[in-house]
Image (cartoon, helix red, strand yellow):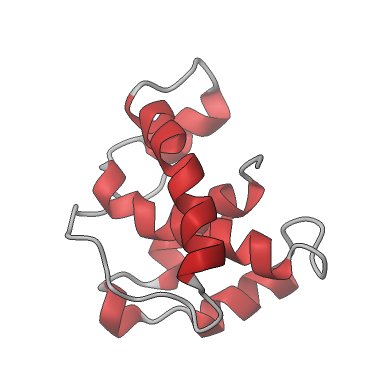
Length: 117
């Protein structure tokens, strides 16, 4: 799967309405470093590499963060990624504040959602 390259930008201030710094923020801070390290120095995994091609971590991080938070929020309702979940998250995504369409960021949202805790 070829993903269009996203341009790096400053960390978006947007968070999903359910995002609570003491819950979602703390959990994200706990895994962020490991995920970004894997991004910069990917393991030999053709599936992962396809998503990383041509994309800077700064551009992908908002999607990973959103997917990770969504797993914490909706994981009991959605045990795995589905079309229904993708529609729900796409409807919540704020393109104006993030500067990215959900279509461009959704592969990273999915990987964030599927990240092992």
